[in-house]
Amino acid sequence: MAASVFLSSTGLDLEEDCRPYVRSAVTGCGADEVCMESWVADYEEAEKVCRSHLERSSHYLGVFAHWRGSSPPGQERSYTEAEFDWACELSKTKAVLVPKASTPYDRKLRRRAKAQDARAAEAQKNFVRRVRSMGVTMDFEDVPQLVRKTIQLVSTWVGRGVMSEGERASVGGAPAPNEADLVSLGRRELVAQFERAFEIMAGVALAEVVGFLVQGPVGYGHAQAVRRLREEFEDANEDAQPRRVVLPVGGYWDGNDLNGMLSAFGRAVDEKWEPADVSALAARVKKLLESEHVLLEIHDLQRYGGGLTSFVAQFWKPLTDALGAQAHRHKLVAFMSHEGAPGDDWDACAFDPAADDDADFESARPVKLPALIVFTEKELTAWLRGWLKEAGAFGGDAAKQLTRARELAAIVAAETGGEPLKVYSKLSTLAAN
Image 1 (cartoon, rainbow, N blue to C red):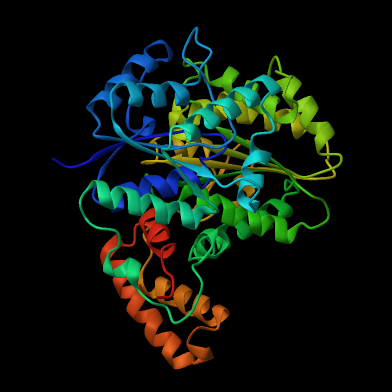
Image 2 (cartoon, helix red, strand yellow; image 1 turned 60 degrees about the vertical axis):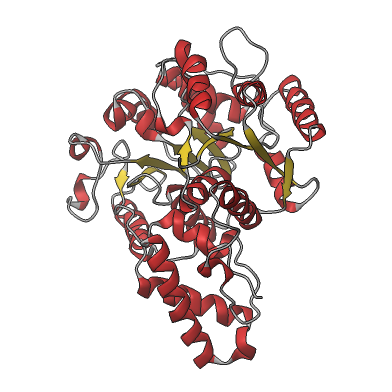
């Protein structure tokens, strides 16, 4: 029977990079992944559904950091802690990956968890300490190492050994690529449309508030694409340090998506504040825009009740209408990630710079960027060649670098089909022998 791996991790701190890479690594090793993205449950039923999925899984894999996460109704322990306890009760084969203390990446994860209150932070600290005492943890120092250790674990569980041919591939002395290296792969059309949209908005004097819709099939690297665009914006707007607000659409908002969005946004601004409505939120955002750009990341928009149309009508349009009444010193830029097929009703509420007339743009319509697609062997070759050159592989011999880049691109393309998360996971394992 194929291994089925139940993945347990929090969203707010790990959704951008850790969780998507781990999910891809699990399936790339030939195991079935079992995670909350693959089932739907009402708030009151979530605990029951979650446990039933764990019972049917053959293995348990946890990825824990410093964010506590939400709790089942009436309980003090979080869903993540409950899932670990259930795995222990059910005697599941298990492993837990945790960031190595005091490393740069651990400090990054701590910063992501600063929005929670002191009580939640202490509870999570005690939980992780308890898990470490049970001897089931493995430390990781960064995302590429997290991927490598996930592959080692799951490959053992499915009886595949540790590494495939592509994962053993020598690259002539170059170090393994880091997260920033991987994000730079391809996506030129996406970046071009992103930049073009700002040109359009500047032409109609509406460049201060804008949303971008990053869309494509599940597992096509939405978080990485958002990071790529975020970095493009930061490079082009160095006049002020932007404030980054991350809002994953919650799976446990009890169907009240607007209040969940407002509450999450409020806590990101001030951990003790919950805006009563969009108008109150807009008033606070106006003050923020006096001193800094605000970059808003909304992940898993496909979970929002009623889809993109409801999200725009309930949240984005009222926010942009309130902000659009006056000029601001800085920009509010929202990146909205939608995983899955586009809705039939998107044309009415989104702006497509490739098809719509420039004069039809308005801030209330998120800019629909080109759909994320698979990476081609040509793109992989170009990226690998640049990476090898930057690393000085093969003593700087350009011909050898190109030859090796083509060989590796063929291996990666064959093993992944060009699917973005599988490509990212595969590339993160490359290292010299």
